[in-house]
Length: 175
Image 1 (cartoon, rainbow, N blue to C red):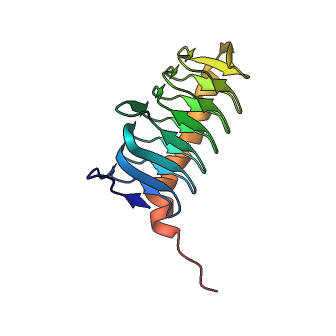
Image 2: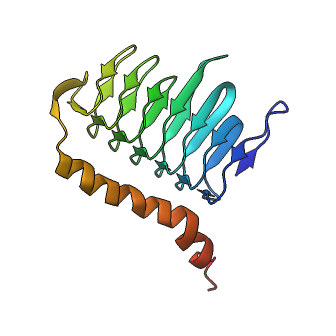
């Protein structure tokens, strides 16, 4: 559901898909061809949230920001099932693993990876092209060109779901 809050109406880009049971509320901007999965919560109630083009926000993700502040998510980002992003910056191409948490004022660089279940603490940083794992998240290495190529394909699957497959084919089933 898309909700206006205190006069702020979310902006949903062309070719984007938001599941009926997801919530996008208030001061939120979704770019073009953004996928918002079932159960996701994107709350721009007292902060601002900006999501770039071709980004996938998978099932049960929570995105929020502090009062008067911002959560910024770049283009072609993957935010895995059940992740939590709060008042942070995620740069283009990054991958946030399932169940990961990226906390206040943290930054995840371009094409960086936060592994499943990892926690990037307050003011933490994952440099561009690096992989962070654990609690708290620690950088353990760099991504390879093969990783980037493989993940570009995975990312494009969600772009296709948002912009073509769901709008053309998803229907309520008749019992």
